[in-house]
Amino acid sequence: MTTTTVTRPVSGQLMAPLVEPVTFAGLSLASRFVMAPMTRFRSPGGVPTPEVAAYYRRRAEQRVGLIVTEGVLVGHPSAGHERTVPRMTAGPAKAGWRRVVDDVHAAGGRIAAQLWHLGSLRDPVDGVRAWTPSGVREPGRPASHAMTLKDMDVLLESYAEAARVAARAGFDAVEVHAAHGYLLDEFLWPFTNRRTDAYGGPPARRVAFPAEVVRAVRTAFPADRPVIVRFSQFKERRFDGRIAETPEQLGQILTAFADAGADAFHASQRRFWQPAFPGSARNLAGWAKRLTGLPAITVGSVALTREFLRPGGPESMSGLVERLTEGEFDLVALGRILLANPAWVTNAADGNLDMISDYRKEHEDSYH
Ligand SMILES: Cc1cc2nc3c(=O)[nH]c(=O)nc-3n(C[C@H](O)[C@H](O)[C@H](O)COP(=O)(O)O)c2cc1C
Image 1: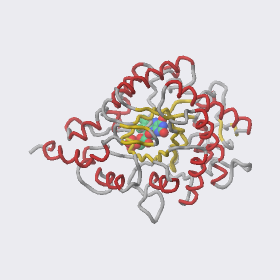
Image 2: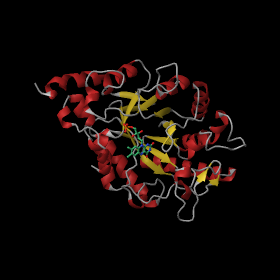
Image 3: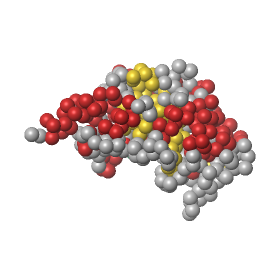
Image 4: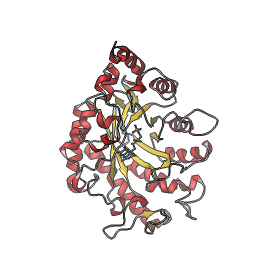
């Protein structure tokens, strides 16, 4: 008996609740699977090419309900320096995005643009220093520019402009990137936010600027299309970094986002099955939903190998679906497994496990 024969009916049955149509924050989606945002360095001059459009379309054709683009730089020069990371507002980028959106829509998919500012993780090139809340950077890195109140106004307009352009390009949603140690997360994290004004101090003050960004984006983006906020505890370069030590602190941060107009949360963690706080099995997305009542996306090491699809414990598809059906979160984002497997959702749902490649690091170098 082959592995395929054994598992074909099982993975499909297990996954059934994930591959049915759903409405999420007002969006009709073909499934509960989301493509997680992943920077790919494939947009020369910041302009997404037809190859980029085809890459996203391939996932939409295979029952990924919502695609979140790779991080897209907002217009201000401090946002980022990389020449192949896409931009939103640069002239020719606008037509590039229209094509991406049209291709995804033609495949029956939905797509959100992730709006990004690198903060201290921008290299100081082109005569522009990194912009950060307090000038704090990692040891050995050049000093960064501590943002003034006027700088904040400038960036609010950059985010708003990016949201307006995204709306005109036809994006179904935008996602504000406030995770992983980039600018907005640097405001949330006490280590990088040492401000003594209204934008630093306790959680409710550290969230003030990121929440103003969400408000600016919400105001600029059509009211009938959702604004998602992505946040995390961990930082790309500090896995133990935390924005909130307790659910109460997290509640203060997320409530401020909700009050500013956030429609949903994308709670980034490295392993979805890990509890966010001691004393409860609830993960970070579970807490976001519980603390705000807003819908939430979970993510983190979902389905990296085919083993995940066999009936198993909390770290398997069974555990994931159990949490979903209990209402802990609403959507499930897939990152790395979708790099090598554009058709992962279809193949897993149909039990075609022999057509799925387990994730390997070198998949991050391929682009198809
Ligand atoms: C190559 C790569 C690029 C990524 N780029 C981004 C990004 O631009 N924005 C973001 O919020 N997260 C980014 N992430 C994190 C993913 O969105 C996701 O949270 C992470 O890969 C965990 O999900 P996974 O275990 O399913 O891969 C990236 C991850 C990878 C592997």
